[in-house]
Amino acid sequence: MTAVDVRLDHLAIAARYAAAPGQWPVAPRFNPVDRWYHRLTVAEDHEVWLLTWLPGQGTDLHDHGGSSGAFLVVAGTLTEETVAPGKLTGDTIGGGTLTGKTVTGGTLTADTIGGGTLTGKTVTGGTLTADTIGAGTLTADTLTAATLTGKTVTAGTPTRQTGDERPRAVARELSAGDGRRFGPRHIHRVTNRSTRPAISIHVYGPALTTMTRYRLTAAGLEIRTVEAAGAQW
Ligand SMILES: [Fe+2]
Image (cartoon, rainbow, N blue to C red):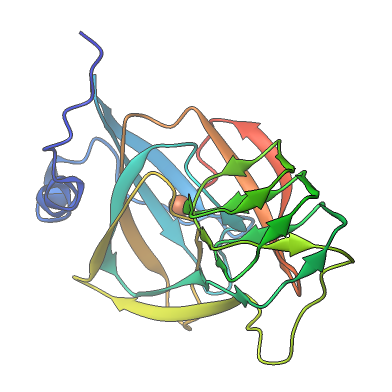
């Protein structure tokens, strides 16, 4: 059977491994070139990795290809950055075409489409609700994690409004013993910003198969690459 057991507590699994370093099949090592990693176990519905981080070593912004998981700091301190949602409000297009709008991990609200065409919309991270399209067409929507509500388009070109919030990176520190769970759409960057080496345990369920790397621009998250699974996260 290949179904994923959603009741698995990935952080609890990480904590069990963190508490028993004597049972790890290898001792952690440090690589001056890049993070060192070793897979401790792979099961039907999850895998466990041991990672080490010298000061300054870290990942790019990445997701986990639809896997959920958790990571726990065993020694040292790691900084996790996530992207706070931006907010784009008050787009109004009277009688025209709205194309290529991209909202990444944010909220797009108060739009209305009257007799026009809304195409090429990409919303990464949420829910598309309450769209009002009068005699128009809404096509090619891709939704993964934001909220799009009450859209009205009647003519023109949407521009960012005063007061709109751009997506931004938010950092939080995790010290030894700290961990965090994440869901299948989590995007983050993890770095050792401290002056001491760090060790961490990472659990993914199901095992990683792909990952997407992102860059954060003024407009939001931009996809850089989509890669097959390795241990780069
Ligand atoms: Fe990650």
